[in-house]
Length: 164
Image (cartoon, rainbow, N blue to C red; front, top):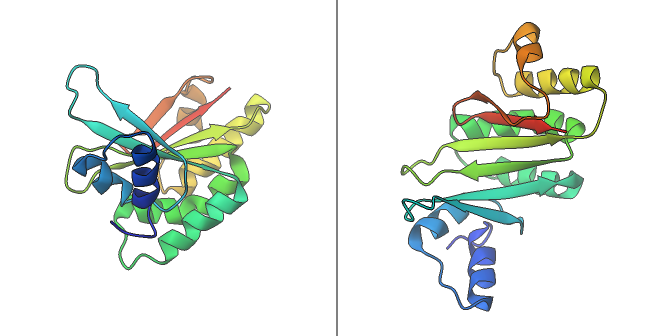
């Protein structure tokens, strides 16, 4: 278990409730920084698959994430994109969630952002800036086609944006 990750926090919370931490869940938790907000996702059919999410809200948690990313010796492409987009994300969202899907040895990273209540043109501009910060190529006309007030997948396991 890595001390500067979510894993020890998750172990503590689960143990306080009398639950154990399954190996796959511990593995995912060790891929997140030590910020104590998490969510679990599992299918009702399969039962074996567990995805782990971590909410990042406010400047302090964003700073902790940035510091954690800066301290990593190597980062995969999705984590580098996240690191590079953090400044733009922090300026334009109320909160964001990171998600790792337990489907592979190197689980894919998804990022979900929540835009604040704002006029549609301002929301569209902020959304465009966020997408561009991730290095995702999306024209303004394509962005205008995205349905507001819906969670919209912009590309596989890369960025999902919602507002409203």
